[in-house]
Structures are given as structure tokens and as C-alpha cells.
Length: 117
Image 1 (cartoon, rainbow, N blue to C red):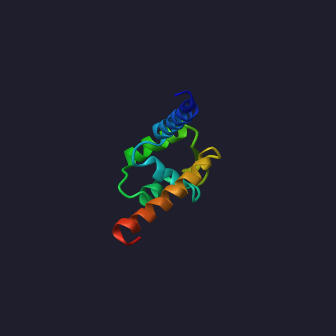
Image 2 (cartoon, one colour):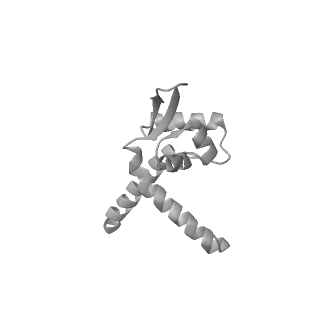
Image 3 (cartoon, one colour):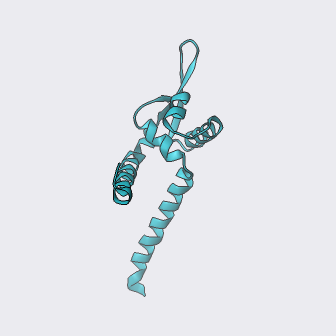
């Protein structure tokens, strides 16, 4: 049993990391918001248009949570009328590889199951 301890410890550590990530990115919207922002700053209405099915109340809530966790920041744009852009932070960009891999896997799975992209 002692020989299993390092493997068990590594497994448990991996599970803790996955749980922490899921706690931050849970739900059906946060990863989509982050994915949209990897392509550059977006206005609120742009995010609503890109992320099909999300309502303004939910988008606002999710953006606030992402901002609270340091993944997204609001930038006030000084024009008439004053606007707000949402920008992925440097810390948020550390998720870009995960988001790309998730997208790649999802597209591959779609082809596997449905035979089309």
C-alpha cells in the first residue's frame, strides 16, 4: 500500500485542482465568455450576440464573477456615449490553452458522433 501512496497523492492533488477550476468556471456560460474574450476586447452587446442564448442578467452576473476572480476586467471607453469593454486579463489568458483544447476536443467529438462539424 505504501508504494501506492505517491500515485494516490498525485491523483488526489489532481482532483483538488480540477475541483478548484470547476468552482471558478462552472456553469454553461463562463468558458464561452472566456473563449470569446480570447479573440480580443468585447462590448457587452457583442458578447450577447456571440454567446447564443445568454440573457443580459446572466451575462452581467457571469462577467462580475469572472472579474472577481481576476480573469476579466472592465475597461471604460471614453467616447460619446461612454462605453465599456470587457477584456481578458493576463491571468485569464492562462486558460487559453485549455479553451483551445476543449474546443478541439468538442469539434472532434461532434465529427465522431454526428459525422459533421
